[in-house]
Image (cartoon, rainbow, N blue to C red; front, side, top):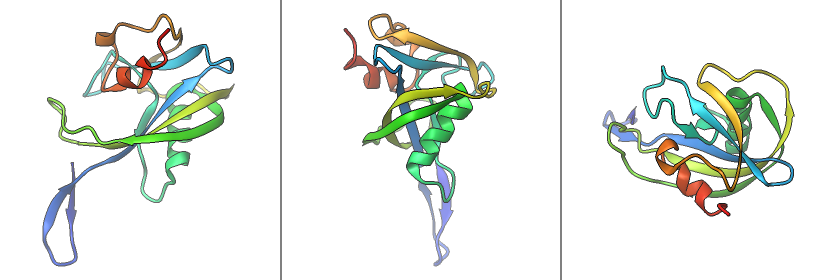
Length: 147
């Protein structure tokens, strides 16, 4: 949670704003997933869609493009906002993020992924990792595409 102090001196805990991006291959037959690095606090070693926190003064779409680039090394050819989710606290996580979900088509690979990504891999939509190997609520994002 974010601790915020208001003008009148009162304090409260606010939710984080995050972005997640389901990145498809150009033919929409594959999806790009990231295995979270072992040094990360939550869901280490699990597969997730690229995503992360929205920075202060950052547009949601720019945050989504930035997170994909940082975690995968890929630019995006196109991106579309799909919906927001506001799942509440999960065990061990007090952040209660409000997440802006996007779908995107991959562009060119221009750099190596950052240290948050242990592995970056394309998966056929018919051969995704098992549900228990996918972190956070990201299986829910992907299950409607299962063949």
